[in-house]
Amino acid sequence: MQALSASDLQHLQNINQSSDMRAVYLKGGIKGLNRALKTGGDILHFYGSDWLVTHVLEEWGYGQWSKLAVTRQTSPAPE
Figure 1 (spheres, helix red, strand yellow):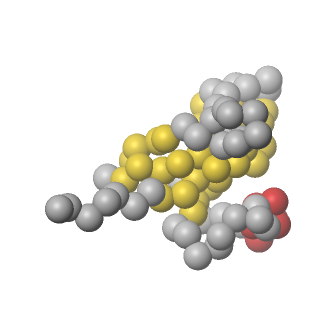
Figure 2: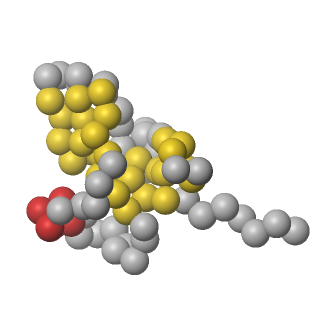
């Protein structure tokens, strides 16, 4: 996991940049959130938080490796 680069941020122009976002490299293929196709929205759990896969930035080797943009999900306040 690492911070998003300037070129990654250009790919994400329509996403709220005030969110806690990171780039993640993952072995395997995974799909980002696509509301029109009703696909993706996968959640990764690391560093004690859930991270929503919001965009696939790059794929290598027919789904063998993926570079993903993820956004930290906030948990609801306890009642």
